[in-house]
Image (cartoon, rainbow over all chains, first blue to last red; front, side):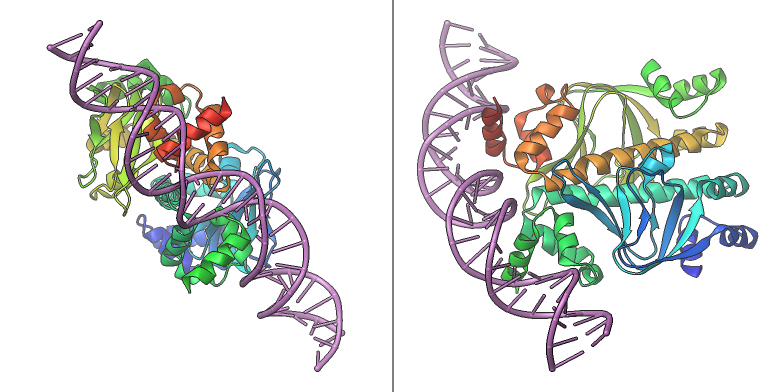
Length: 189
Length: 189
DNA sequence: GACAACATTTGCCAAATGGCAAAAACTGAA
DNA sequence: TTCAGTTTTTGCCATTTGGCAAATGTTGTC
């Protein structure tokens, strides 16, 4: 739980009562590698804080290829925001890349927190904004780079992730085939 | 002003007093094509609602190439969120692609609105979330597509934009050279 | 250790894209 | 209309990447 509370405290102040309230709502679940946290076609009913492990968000494009949108590692929130916000069926999967420990909250519990804790909406605002900034800053420059540069940028930004993620998933995140990534790797050594 | 109010009303209820308050804070400015709304190196002090025209967000990568991150057209908010949120120097430019009419708000004015209008933070939350969803959904699939498919997707999603944007900017948005985009165009006809 | 299941690397060739420079088309002002 | 400045198209060739299939390497289980 400490990771979660420390994470939240980055974005606003919380007193002990509020911290205890948050802790009382969080529920710890464990996922095995390849388990799904949420699935396409279903409505996302929960938000997860990644206490340990790596998740990925992925979907199938119109050619039937599986595309990894992004990875979510320790000390970040994971949610299919589109499905969760509008309570519509999800278009993507959230899957465990490694075994994971997650702290989960339902929509109702979050609603309780937002009405009880005055700073809550502001905190969530900041987390959403930070996520928006990070994702756009990370994904958008990739378009202008060739595959090799994308891979190097990834290594640079997430040195600890590359070893924990299978090549195939990393390739689909980078937008190239597994073979190409393998060649790029060789080329760099 | 009506565009702005209608836009906000999508995300939450506002009474007449609140609407008048919002109107009283908004300031209309006009930009000529190629003018900057905000510039790299400076701190973004304002948020703009695009009443008319097209803006783009762009930056220079480490090779000195100018990259268009995305376009912002009528009835959307434009802001360098990273700079505005944290009051740090911006890493990107927000520039008028066509002549524009913008309604602008300062950070102080927004703060006033958030303390006076109870639903404000919730509305902003939803707008930020929507923006996050849209940008990630739009940019991330582009990586897995080849340039031709990216161009077709763009035409499909923004049929009205393609004609109003110079080829060079569209190419840098799509992550390809101007020559390649020109060839793709010919190829499609 | 042996085996099956899975992950990664490689070879081959075709297709896509970039880099550069010149030509052609378009635009706006005098 | 003309001309200069800008934007778009084209040609040529090198490089990157994809598609496919086979080979090699790795991991966990019995």
